[in-house]
Length: 166
Image (cartoon, rainbow, N blue to C red):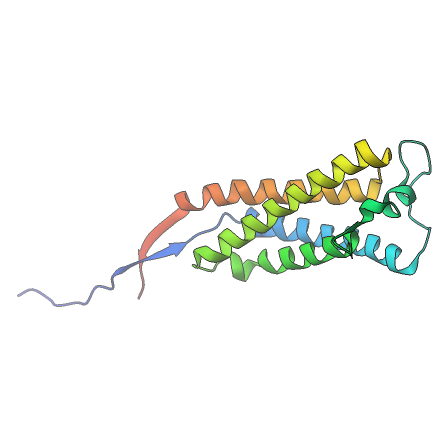
């Protein structure tokens, strides 16, 4: 006599490598801190940027140039908003989300950040003739975050597994 036990259908469960949410969240928080500092300096009109004032490295020259605003918004505020959004998108709970749209928005937002960083680096090197170390830190963090997300997104389709849900 055959037993009739119900078997639950296989459901796709997204597994994320452990390092991915942690690394992306750390990078987002570091970017949030650095861009927060730049935003604070911008809005308080402080000149205490911890940056040497030489010909090539001059944070004050960069942060007060015409390129320190984009479409009327301070670039530092745009960076702060970017990293605030990225911090939310990189929370472990959202990494566990089965919604593909979260993954797409996270990667697209990071890609937009890299494009903007390339524009700002171009402005520093070819238009302002000075580099801001704090801005460079934000640029490096943005590129690293995009790299982590791109690698992580490439790994995710391969890590989709099917397991029965009880």
